[in-house]
Length: 201
Image 1: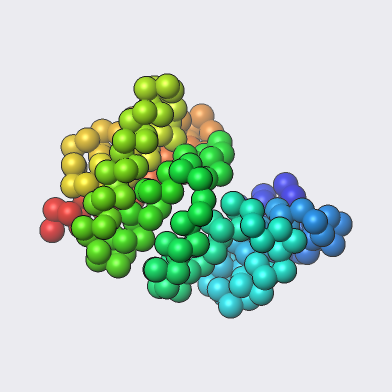
Image 2: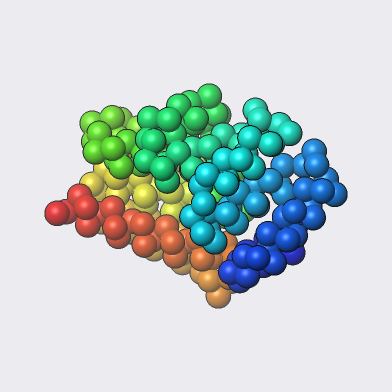
């Protein structure tokens, strides 16, 4: 599993794919091999059709991680309503990990934004804001929440708040502290600048 992940991170996709296949053969009931294979197929050659075949073979189709991959692939294929439907039954904060803390409402808002359904996007961004505000009161030093807040503020057109929170997330967890998770904070800040530019244009 770690070899598959590491080779993917250094963009040696053929070797990563080899270890994904090995992982699936060794542990056919574990999800990680399948999910890494999906990521590898999309990141290496944008092959969503092959990724769907792998997802269809998942041993546990009702897992949160599976629904998140469905939504991701559907978004890439511009089936935005299908992506929203894939997220619908997930918990309010699906599958947080060491690098991400993304409310379902935030993901749904971004998909609505891609659809140019800005009224519905704003309603979901507002929902995400309430949830993230509550979480930040519990964990004010959580870099993931600051970055997520920055994206939500950007979606709501609150440029200064968005950039402040994005920078705060990166300040709390810079790439010099963690080259893996710190890169997500950079990506989030880049997304914030894109979103505020869209709202400012």
